[in-house]
Image 1 (cartoon, rainbow, N blue to C red):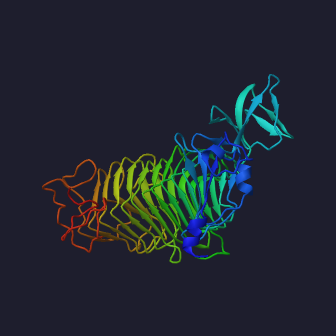
Image 2 (image 1 turned 180 degrees about the horizontal axis):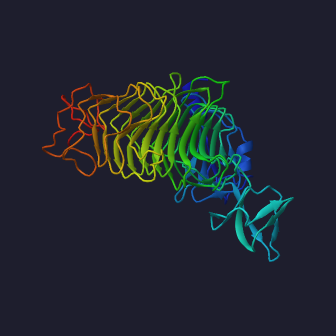
Image 3 (image 1 turned 180 degrees about the vertical axis):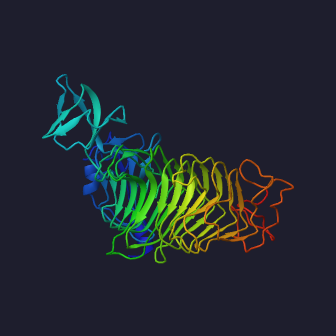
Length: 454
C-alpha cells in the first residue's frame, strides 16, 4: 500500500464522555463514549483517535492496531481544557460500618489523591476496610498501553492513580517498535510511571511525572528502559522529561541484555537518583539536564555525559570504565555523605578505570572535588575548574591532571560562567568538546571549565 493511499484512507475518530458508542465517531458531535469501544476497534495506518480534553475515563487504553512506518496510529486530544485522563482507580465510599464492597483487588487507597499509609486500610475477599469516607482505590495498572502494537503515537494524555507494588505503570510500551510518547503525564503510579519494555525505537518527548506509591519493596523508577536477552539493540530516547516529588526513588534506570544505545537529553530530576548502566553494545549518553539534591550513578562502561547540571546535595558516582564526562556543571552543598558516603563531587569506585573528566566545573563546599576509592584508576582530569572549600582530592591522588584550575579567584558568575577578566577564558589546552555546557560553540583556544564567557 503506497503512502498516498494511506493518506487518503486515514481517518479521525472522536471519543467523549458525552458521546455514545452507537455513534460513528467521525465527528465531535457523533463521538464514541467508552475506552472499551476504542480498544475493540480496528484502525488503519495514519488514523487518529482523539479524546475530548477535560474528559476522564476509568479504564485502560490499549492500542488495538499497528500503524506503518511514517504513518502511525495516533492517540491524542481535541478541544480545549485539561488533557484527557485515564484513571487506574475507582471511587469508593466506605460506610459507617467501616466497610465497602469492591470486587477488584485494591493495590492502594487514596483520600483526596493522597496515599493512605499501610495499616490504615485493608482489602480481602471483596471487602475494603477503612475509616468511613470517600476514597479512590487503585484497581488497574497500565492506564495507557502499547499492547504489542507498532508505529504508534500517544500525545497529550494523562495517566493517574495506577499504583501497585508489583507493577503499576502509568504508560507502558511493551513488545512494540516505533512508539512515541509526546507531552504526556503520569501521576501516582507504582513501579514505573513511563516504561519502555522489550521495545525498540521508543521516544519519550516532553513527559512529566510525579509522586509514586510510598514504600514499594525494591523501590520505584519513574522512567525505565528494559529489554531482556531475547532481544538485541533496542534503542530508546528520553528527551526533555521531568520528574518531581520522587521521595528518594530513582528518576531513571536501565537494565537488560537486549538494550542498545540510549540517549537521555535534558532530563530534570528534582530529588531522585539518576542510575544508568551502559556498555559497548548499549552505550548511554546523557546530554544536558538537571539533577537536584541527588546523584548520577553510572554502572557499566562506555558512558558519556555532556552538559548536565548537578546542584545542591549531589554527586557523580562512577562504577564505570572507559567513559567521558564533559561540560558538567556542579554547584554543590554536600551533606551527610552526599548520597555516596564520601561528600565528594566525583567518586570513582574500586573498579572504575580509564575515565576522563574534562572541561567541567565543580564548585563545592565541605567535601573534596574528586575521591578515588582505590589507586590505579587511570583517571584523566583535563582543563577543569575544581574548587572546594576543603580539598581537591579525597582518597588516592594518582591521576593524570593537566591544566586544571584548582585555587584562586576564577571570576565566575553564580551560574558558573566566566566573567570578564576571568583566568579561565581562552586558557584551555587539551582538545575540547565542540560546544560548551550551554551548547555554545567553543572558540579556539577554549576556556577551561564547563562554560564559555557570555
